[in-house]
Image (cartoon, helix red, strand yellow):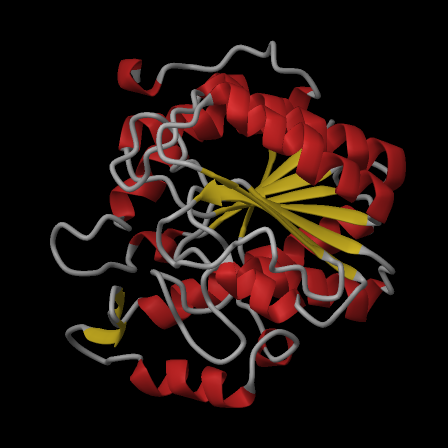
Length: 320
């Protein structure tokens, strides 16, 4: 497997107040780990700037104008209860969108088998008309819409294993039966959505977990709710909202997963991509707020993308 890593230095300049969990340290740790020689075989590119026309595939024009208008020239602006912008934030958000669309180009044109986008701010909470939960633009929803628009993809799927439900992606996909959204997440927890009863046009599949659940419940949710529905959907492209805050060490959730659980989920999704999507997989980094757990979890996730196996060696971030 040839895996493309997309990132950009400006994503390290986006920040919130001191102590905010969605900090530059997250991406710094991921980038440091992915420089290890275990990942030498990856292709690497800087994320290009996203385009307004692509953002507007998933967001209302009023939303785009709001984000542009709130971008500060100095200081910090609060755009949501826990979402902030500094002067670098607008470009960082555009680079995250650019990473998403460039990944679609690379995978759909068969330049690479799959891609991992190490960018921030994250995206899956941003709805069509509002920022939310650390997110400005919903990059993964934009990727799905772009694959439809630019490449005529008939069926595009997003599977989200972040500990928080991707309300934004669900909101944007809600009325389009050619888009699939499947999510495992903790409930009750921010943002409060993600009930099993939320089904859209029969294209939304939520499998909520309870605080304290671990490997067995997570894998059961995948095996019984997410994977069979995804297999039946027969996606042309599989996108992963790769949040790693369901890790047992994460301070913002109470799900007890370990690194090997993320590798397992990645491989299961790759099996379906192999069956239906000619191995086309794109992963976008979402949450994960314990630095060591985030980096190590990304390591096994990317190794699975590169090797198609959970047995690849991955460095321990704490040893770097």
